Structures are given as C-alpha cells and as structure tokens.
Image 1 (cartoon, rainbow, N blue to C red):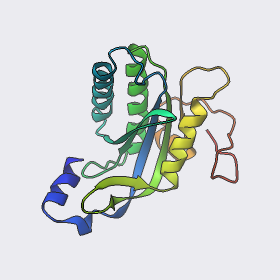
Image 2 (cartoon, helix red, strand yellow):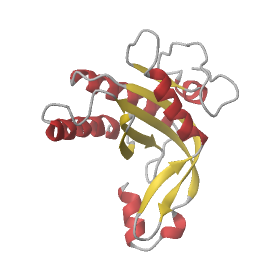
Image 3 (tube, one colour):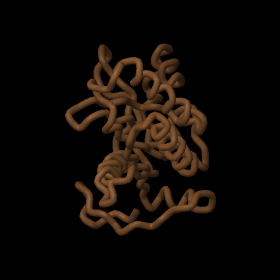
Length: 191
C-alpha cells in the first residue's frame, strides 16, 4: 500500500509492525494460467478489474501468487491507512464484486473470506522485503478458498468464517453450510 511505501521511503520502519484487525480475501483463479489466450494482456485486464472491484470497498491487494496450485490473489481490508469498523462487511461485498467480475470474464473462482487479528508488517531483508500479513486468520482464508474450490456441486463459491458472518450478517444474506475440516484446525470450521 502507498501508505507503507511512504513510511519506508521516509525511514519510519519501526512503526510498520503491528497486530491489526483485518478481513482477508484469498481468491483462486484456476482458469488463469500461462496457457490463457493472449495471456499477459488478458491477465493484466483481469487483475485491473479485480483491483477496481476491491478498491471500491477500500481494500488492498497484498500479493498475487503464481505457483503449482495456480494463480491466487491475496487481498485485505483494514491495512494502513484504510481501516473501518465495517471491514468485514466491505470484505464480503468486495468478494461478491470480484466474483461477479470474474464471471464476466468467463472465469471460475473460489474465494475464502476471514476476519480477525493478524501480524502486519515487513518481512525480509533491507535488499528484498515485502509488507505482509501473518496469522491464523490468513491461513484460514487460504483453507476456505481451497474448500470453496472443492464443493460437491462444483459451482464457484465464496466461503467465509464465523467472525465475518457475525460482523456482516445484518447487511448481507448468508447461507449456512456444514462445517468443514481444514488443515491446521483441530475442530471443523463453521461456514
């Protein structure tokens, strides 16, 4: 985020590491890979459209991962300097907007949305570092994204945790689903 970059440039790195309440979105883009027709131009258009949908709710793209599991966009609401009391609601709205955007591109997706406290700060060395989020809330968002991609009916889905549901239920309609077992959790997670 620009606020982080300006702090880095001015040498204010001691103020970057903190525990913050964030809403995390993990968006899997299984249909997007190097074999996509006109791959680079199409990928650029898709990412710009996703950013537009996310920025409407004042969220930030944290990173885009490309690995053996495909392409994943990691985003958050509540990162500096934009934190709101209703970031969980904004996160759900952003996930819905991103889902719609991807459907307009003819792409499938799976999205995991979670809310809670995470360590937010820079990691790495002075030569190569990044601003990131670390914590259970981040890991759970990734696990929910994976679970959303493997639902029985095969339909693209958005799954969220109990904390996000509690914070956004007054403004968004949710459908409760059976709890799922995910890596790193002893008990099944409510969806």
